[in-house]
Length: 242
Image (cartoon, rainbow, N blue to C red; front, side, top):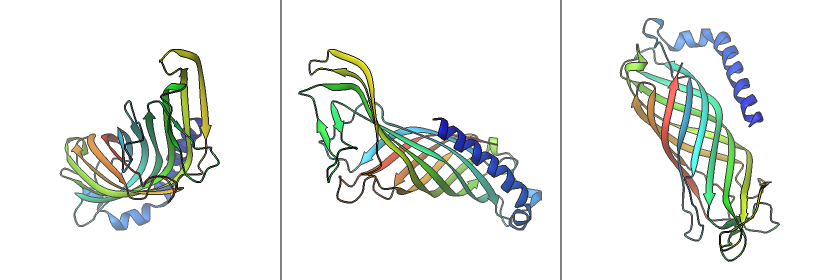
């Protein structure tokens, strides 16, 4: 988490420098007279995660979720300031939870193992988490660009990501009867079975600083041949501003 926090701070700092040095290029793209007061430069996203294409043999549980933070530069079109293009950077995280399952991300096997361990010891809480550094690009529409806080908004786009971290975490070891054996926590990290890059299609629709978002990963989560062709799908809420 410390690394993620430092990365976000560095992204915001770099954005401030870019905004100051790129004013000439920006002047050519926008009309200052019709420039929006706010460009949704900062976005926080929280949503529900599902794995499209996952076989029934993988026992997911709980509330899988995604959490993202982005800082973007918004460039309104000079001919029509209701439309704009945005580009930026940030961090995207996914957390998938499992029931009585072992995920062998560090196993020296040719395929990724999802073992059902209901007949032996298992962790009460068990999740697989991924962290990506991402570059989102959006085509945006704002019905009232002079006051984005009172505006209907829509956006479509894509985001490209690079895998920073992948790992599993198990907490509270139990026997098959559900009785606690030990309350210790196990963490394992490995990117061996995962695609290092990802590309996802995105969409947003909302009003003011609140909108619904959807994200569908075009590339597969895992490398070809090591697991099912799983493509994460997320839907949730975006909080935006600045």
